[in-house]
Image 1: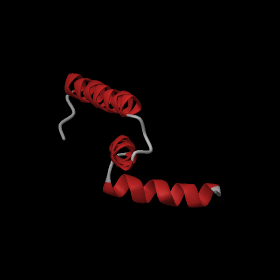
Image 2: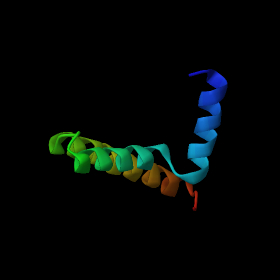
Image 3: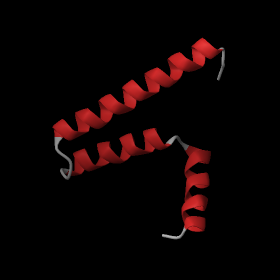
Length: 66
């Protein structure tokens, strides 16, 4: 994939959803399809929730409001 194509895809994805949420949705779909083990899905979910919690805490500390 070329850099310009990747950049375009990144802009489209950022416009509609966060990358972390997109990864979580894909992981959930793969788990429901039976392609992803449930233990792996738990790891992805924990990383998503933990990462988002840290981002929210830092934003609150710095005074950013969404």
